[in-house]
Image 1 (cartoon, rainbow, N blue to C red):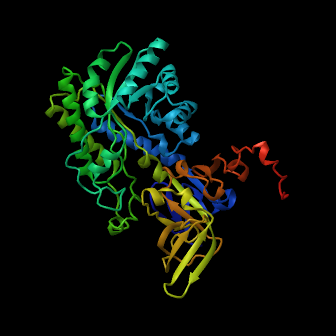
Image 2: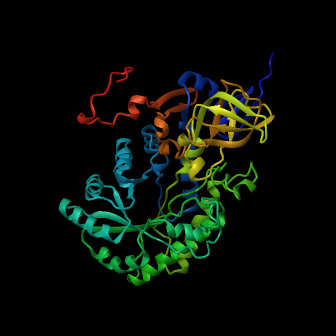
Image 3: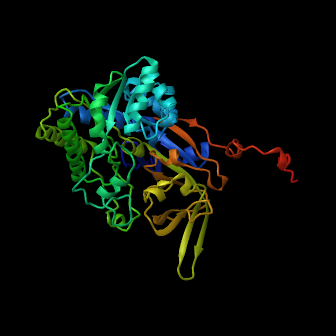
Length: 475
């Protein structure tokens, strides 16, 4: 009898007899059955992550309710949003597309935050009609929301998005490959109402009969995984809130939304920067329980220090990458192996995917953990660049440590459930991959792969330029 060799990587990934399993599905078989490239998501892992977030923050914030509002810009696949709705979460949306996705998936409108800059009257009208909350991003939006609410005969529930100074957050941001600090990077970001404007317009908004100003919101983003950064974020945020409260006659919010930006545990962000390469390959980001403890303890203490109370204040968080990332892998097939023996010697593993389908390779300097799915327990014996099919440089992972790789092998890039499908593009007129949802031993397509016809579906040809030749026939 052959002995089964098993090793668990995390809650949804394991290796059995040299094969990578995603939940109970053989990753190599998924690639053969559904084709590559393809994004694969675990329903079970997404549910586990949501429940873990909810439990961690509920345990640490007994003063009032806690709401988990996933940031659906990280992954707006409708089937995944339906899972979130089933788990009772709300969500954070930017723009009419994301609001439509949340409503189509069945997320409760009262738990939706309509965020983002330059909201149109049409977007505000739809949000107020369905009963969603508006997170105000500028002084100008106050007047627009009041006008729309008055025309609809409703009272709009709104929150102010704050812009803290983040004094003291001088640690370098992981998003940059230079000496840009978190404080400087955060101030460059456009979101939020400038404090001097908010101080001026606040009393009018609080007194407006069309508005119910229920709370405040802040979002630093994932500039660092270090817990001290999150302590500093909360201190700076509450300092602004305390100043506003005093200037507005002691007003206090009923809702406090601390945003998201929490890293996933393997945390590929920034590992391709000069500093990021110094991080140990097996380094793990803090667990969500650690972030929950730091955020709630600091928030409670800072509210008290600024003359406010935590009692009765609903706490909200907006996880994105930390919710979706480790629930997803990206599968690709090796199509060629090329070696340059002359100086400098180099080997390229050619795949059927591209950095354009894994855009955080470029945007956030991610370095992906890579597994050869049919040789998952084979020790590395070479280094090679894993490259894609676009005409860009398209180095997905440079100098990856791999076992001997052959044409036909399948590679899995881990932690790709957040942002990669959402940011995929059609560079070189490449059709974007589909999305596969795994539930235990079952798998089904929840977003079909694009075709070349899909890529050109929006194009029209002016009559003056002549008719388009039939397929396969040149003019």
